Length: 357
Ligand SMILES: [Zn+2]
Ligand SMILES: [Zn+2]
Image 1 (cartoon, rainbow, N blue to C red):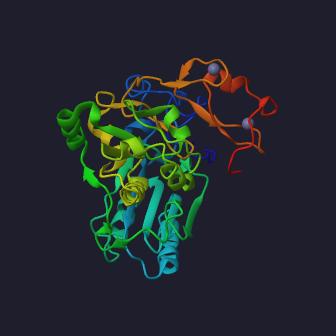
Image 2 (image 1 turned 60 degrees about the vertical axis):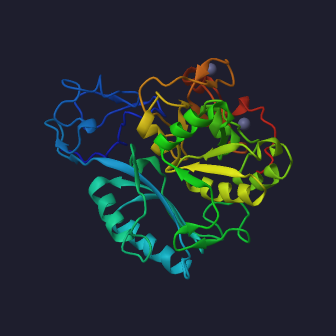
Image 3 (image 1 turned 180 degrees about the vertical axis):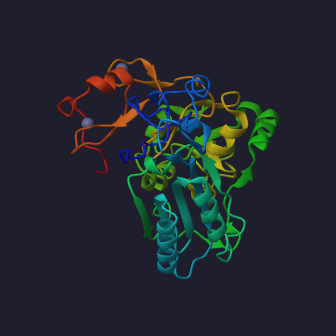
């Protein structure tokens, strides 16, 4: 039996690519496969959707993989040592992903086999102050990341707020009140349209998914938020109840505190971000569309058939798909439907130079 490389794991919510590939399954599995179509006989003995199984046609065992997201704001006296420890830990467990360490804490997204991720959690929780870290599981795999990168930086999220951010053993000091997904709904039930959802991500991320009637600040990078907040554009919201949200919650920890420092009087943040909210309410709540993620998956859904709020840059049709411009000089995020992705060539790029290249 020839040795064959393991193909990336297909996942019910990983719709990012359309190429067909063979995994340890009796028939080709397409990335757009859903659990409904991916059941026997298609699933077979070795169907990757079905966890660790031995396929009768092939001789390897496919282990089930996932992606973990987490963050913890905590004073770290020696971020460099934490970085070395995390690098060694991840390498020993064959994980890939991105981990940032700063004097204010740690922020990680790692993919790998579930058994290894469980060991990663157990080990990471042993660090003083990390026992209560909220690890969020997401569909995906090690293959969704090109490599492992572990870095120590001035900030775990680059707001340019190092002098302003205050962190103690309980997390960010002076941030917005955390609301669970249910508490978000209670707030909306009490205060109605007065509640403002405020997107804490880069504006392009909101093109394919956002909260109903959300304010999406005009920022290309997190670094632009403070200037944007100080521009006066949002001063009329300063006395309103504001719910900030971002992918997993880490950006809102800082955003909500810098908003409060600039006179926003009633600021909340969603505990666990869009990921937690989506797990709780799927397509049935106030979230509309799909969630952009910064790995090869590009987009994840919480349920089948979300509303497609993105508009293809070329044909203007509704879509949730995106890619980075294939022109290597450009790499701009583009909302592009699958058929236009097939046609689009690097030479078709007519994008302006980004504000931050
Ligand atoms: Zn199109
Ligand atoms: Zn371009």
